[in-house]
Length: 275
Image (cartoon, rainbow, N blue to C red; front, side, top):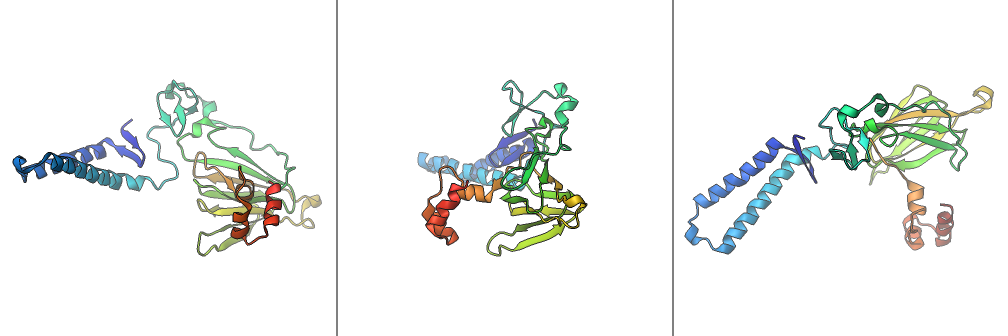
């Protein structure tokens, strides 16, 4: 590994060397302009502490441009994820398989063509393809999902991916999709998509997809819809808004939610009982 991992990001050996050199230069400068006889032990400790602060600020300045990416850029060709503690490198909560032992199946998955059951409250199902299903995705900063919508009125409910932007393409059906911008505007940006249409949901913003297929215009009354989406993280995570707010464990105090949503406390308790 030619870079040091720290809490701020990755720091190369050259950058680390510059930081150490900066520390040394500062120390020589201060000592050359001060007589040792005039320095007390306390002053020396203060000097060392001050230099450490300077070095910390210097390292932060070097590392900060690297902290904006959802996933850090890999420093090797690939890192096939394994759970074996004997692995030589530990990255993003996974050990990396020895590159010489990597095989085609580590980078392969089959099954996104299979139609899944959508018999749930929302009438939709998401089939993920991330590092859990394809170990070779580890450190590559990408993943994808297949989303199926059973019929007119089915929904992929409002949710957010805290670590990834999403680009969605419709294969079948008609979807009304959209996302809401952050405070204070909270502006809804939405559009109706047809097969072949593509739309992007920016990272972290609440978004949804709603099946509005027209029964009269569909073939034999079938309004089934399918979409595929790519995400800019190997594991983007998902927070479904209603589940998080009304179905948290333990439950959020009903008085808090009643005030936040301007609802009656009994209505809040009723909503919580559904999750």
